[in-house]
Amino acid sequence: MGKKKIYVTRRILEPALSILSRKCQVTLNKKPCPPSREEISKNVAGKAGILCMLTDRIDAEVMDKAGSNLQVISSYSTGFEHIDVKEATARGIYVTYTADILAEATADLAFGLILACARNIVSADEYTRNKKWKIAWSPDLMLGYNVHGSTLGIIGLGRIGSAVARRARGFNMKVLYYNRKRNRQLESELRVTYAALDELLAQSDFVSIHTTLNSASNQLIDRTKLRLMKKTAFLINTARGQVVKEVDLVRALERNQIAGAGLDVFETEPLPRSNPLLKMKNVVLLPHIGSATYQTRSKMAEVAARNLLDVLVEKKEPNPKFLVNPEVKNLRPL
Ligand code: DGY
Image (cartoon, rainbow, N blue to C red):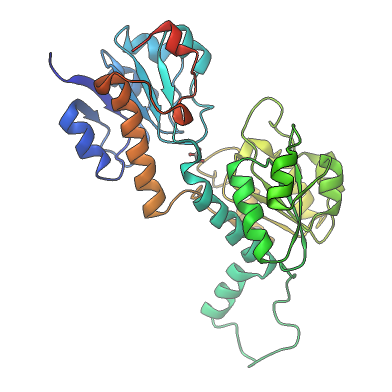
């Protein structure tokens, strides 16, 4: 039997691509940008596997274009809201993702944003570079806020939220968390305190979002929630832009209702040039780089490739930790 045909929607880090090419017939999008809807439809035709990114919408229409050969959709991401999982499951297609591989790297970045916001790191760099630093030392230059000893509110105590909580301990922070389900075991393990969302917002100096995007978290942080935050507090988002109602955040920042925001994710990505956030001084903006370290991205590539090969070549179930739709095993046993 010949090699199985697969479509890889972006160039991923080695050695994953070479491993895939040895075992499968790979069609690769070599362009540095996501394939268009038309390109996806054309390239998935007749493929047994798709290795996609969070920027590729994989819905029933794409599955139709792929045809009945399609057995696995392997996403190079921890979020999988871009895939119609229900539809895939009904068709007996395995859906995999890279689960918690990026938790530690994303937690590092969330902490970076906390520090950057609190201590004006980005604006201070710009100030120094642009030769605005004229007086040797000043008692009130670039004053910020303490991170150590402050209160951190974590929305979503999953893998990433927990990794942020562990870092906060090193800064002697008081950590509150809000989850749909309270987790008493994690509370004692991480020494964090459960709080209702409104209470967390009212008490925290830094509110860091780590929830997945779902119907309950969509626009969870809106005008009414932002109003509960302290005037001196910062909102940090490294999860999904849609968790925050962006127009409401812009309004709160314009009115200095909160001290600032550190954002790695946005409602629309890339950030449209007309987005008012781009002109604001009390924000730190990053281009969705939570997991962007050499080590993490190459591990994600390896896991995404392995998940796909498990189904197509090894004919074995992927590691349950990476399988989004375990029900599929009964529909299409391998
Ligand atoms: C993901 O994988 O879902 C992240 O947002 C990107 O690394």
